[in-house]
Length: 145
Image (cartoon, rainbow, N blue to C red; front, top):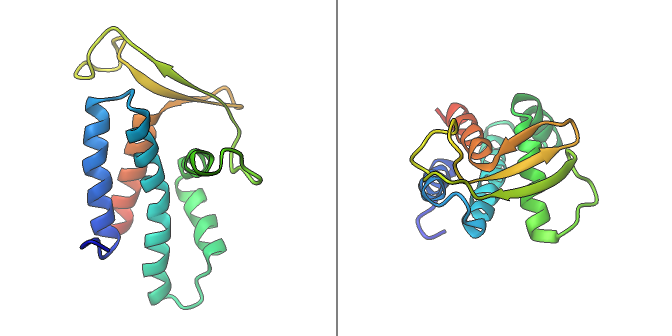
């Protein structure tokens, strides 16, 4: 659609939006879009892999996906919560999300108090949205290379 023909095209859009998010780390709309696109890359890749492996099901694909990149469970829940507000079948347990307005510009490393969007999990783990998206981009690049 609109010259986005395959998963590699979709990944390029994700990477472009991610660069914008890095410059505007508290932009909720952009964070929503990048999380949504990072998660929905799975649909694009699945459709392409299904053409090669006729026995591949969405269930098998997702089991493999979550095993290879557990952070996709977080992206699933973020993307679908943005879309539906509540989830019937979450893949992980997000305790809270937080918009952290830091005192340093996005050009500084995270060693400084930079602004970020944080996701807290029931396992007492925390991950920043930009780190989550970077993990997804790295994963999809490895799958599509």
